[in-house]
Each structure stands twice: as structure tokens, then as C-alpha cells.
Length: 396
Image (cartoon, rainbow, N blue to C red; front, side):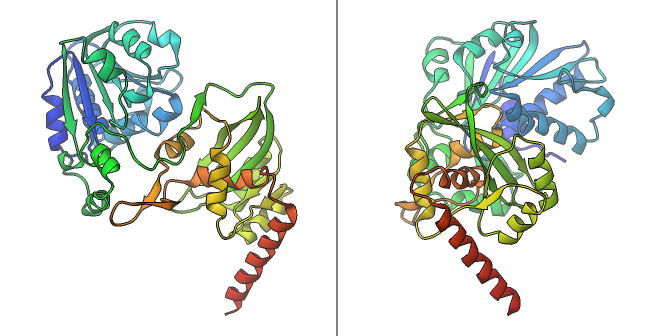
């Protein structure tokens, strides 16, 4: 069950037409808005239409759409028979509807009017998308964001309109958080830039971003050439991540092709067989898995690892012109949140934070075979050493 929190109460108390939710991590911005919108749809005496929008549909699938389904299932409201998967519309028993679409859908942006609208993570959407949606919304418009940079809400909405109100939420407004998550958040208080944005929900610039200059593109150009596929193994707690690397017009395009937990080596091999074939560069820490997948006829080699290899790989990627396909939702999330680690005093260290880097590791592995200084002999030597070490451990 989803409990009522301070964040939920603050969201429901807003009365202006434009309702701006600025906040840090785990502040329950999105959940609080969705709980309220679901409540309204279930209470309507006449049928209404609510639009929930975000930058891309992959973002929806791992975000607001997933959250709505989880909320309604937890409260035993969800009925599969009322979900139209083709149009991404849920029809409530009151006759009210909730639709989900992305801001890159021009027909939806300029289409029919709606009663209510929620733009999730508005800082990743455009001003034009907001204006097209807002002018076609009858009652009110919610939007939320992490304040990691100034964008059109600050420059084009708040200075020029008087029908808005803003609430700043933090993790302290979300009493549903476990003590472990609260402790994890508060351990980052020494990181001034991060803490201002994600701890206190204040406008600021997150320090220590590893990748800054990259772009999101709609699709892979027909002329792009598939160079490599990177693979980072996962299983129970971490996803298996695969990313394709394309060369195009002097730069590289990254395309997420797999991000899934619980995949066996056989399932990995079968999924690769259904993709365009290319050399797969995998984590050399899993030589047994590489050997097994090779038995299924997959062309797979280990990535070179060694002292300094992580930073060398990061540096090589930083030097390239990188684009990411908009369907690569998990990869985009990792790109936006990949930071250098810090010590207890908040000093930035020359090593990345671990955790949310599965697709990025796959990218780095793939690039080891593209970088000119990496050689096949080095890769095979490292693979043999790792295999021998694992065999020695098995015999202990």
C-alpha cells in the first residue's frame, strides 16, 4: 500500500493552474502527483481525460506508467481489461481516462484537449512541448523536476505568469522511505553541489559529472555502421546490459539493446542471435560465461581490464562525439547520473561512483576494442590470467 506522506498532502493542497514541483531525490514528487490524479479519476462524476507525459516512451515504461500500475495493483484497483496497450490508455470505472505519451509525439502535443496534465521530469522536455500541452489543458497542469540546472520553467514560465505556484520537496517530506535509504542520502551531505540539488531540492549544479557533452537523437541513421556490442553481465541484483556502438559522421551512436535482470547465459546468447551480428566485447571477469556463450555460436571476446583501465576507458569515451538513441532509457539515466566519487571531506576523487553504471560499463568494454591502443593480444592475455585465477580459486 502507498501511504499518505507530507509530500502527498503538499501536492494535493496546490490550487493554482500551473503546479510546479521542485525537489530532490526520493522526495515522492511523481508518486504524490500520480496518487492524486488516480484519486480524482476514480472520484469523477463525469468522464475526464488526464494526460501523463515525459520525454520518451522508454522513460514512461520505467517511470510514471510503471508507477501508476504499481500503485493501482497495490490498492487492488488495476484491471487488465481496462488497459488499452495499443493506445496506452487506462479507462477507470467512472469512465475517466488516463493516457500516457511522450513529448516527441507531435500529433499528441497538438491534438485533442484534456482536463488535466502532468509533465514528468519537465527539465528533460522542451518549452514548446509545455506550451502546446498547457494551452490545450482545461483544469490544471502539474510538472516536476530535479533542479540540477536552470531551464525554461525558470526563464519562460515563472517570470512571465502569475497563475503558478511552486512547492519544494525533499526526502524529509517522504515518510515512507526506509531508514537505510535515508542514511544513504544523508551520507552525501559533504558533497555540496549534489546535496543542494538532491538533498535539499535547491537549484544548483551537480559537481563531478563524468560525461557532460553528449546528445539524444531520435533514431540511428541508415548510413551508420555497427562497430561493436558491449556486454556487462548481471543476474539477480544487477541487470545484464548490452549496448551497440555505431560509427557515424565522425562520432559514435550508442543504442541500448538489453537491460534485464535474471538472464541466464543461454538467454543472453539467444537474444544476441536475434540481433544484427557483430563482435561482442564482454566483461572479462566472467570467463566461464564467455566460454559458455561462445558455445552457442556467438562471436564474443573479453574486454581488457587492468590497472587504470576504467579511467582510460572513461577518458576515451569523453574524447568522442557521443549520441544516444532516445529509446535507450536506462543508458540515458546512467549518463545523467554518472559522477566522480568523493572522499569524506567532499573532495572529488579520480574514480567513478559505483552502482548505476551497468550500461556505461558495457559501453566502455565495447570501446576497448575500438580504441587504437587496445590490442587483441592484450585482451587474450588478460582473459587467460582471469580464467587461471578463477580455476585456482575453484580448487582451493
